[in-house]
Length: 137
Image (cartoon, rainbow, N blue to C red; front, side, top):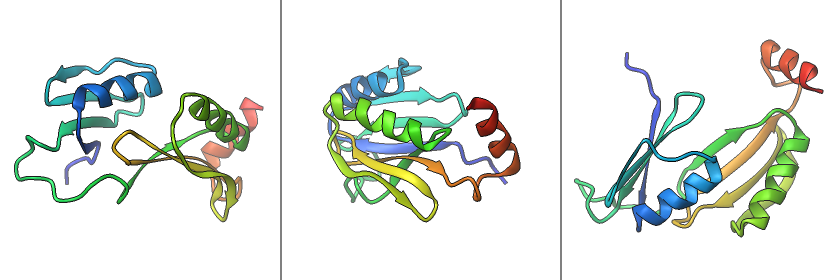
């Protein structure tokens, strides 16, 4: 079976979206054209931003039907990232809250794609994640 490591968002203005994600991810795209931009994250995940006007077959939906999730080390980082993104002017769909899986909040990108930041509750983290979190504090 092939490895799933690529997410595509269909966007109105790829260059504007590329600038947004460059600032958010603190990195430049590895590929950038008038209709497409590609980011490679530290995890190996690739995030592609493709013009909804040029993708074939045509995209039927809009942003908001799925989420790009960012796992962080602990609840304090969730709150810190919320402050940072709020200061950048990102619309906040859900303020930081404690959910059954841990601390989380949801923001929106310029096309309405949901961006979730979360920290797993300690009892849900894998053993190596619990060890890393304990060492980070």
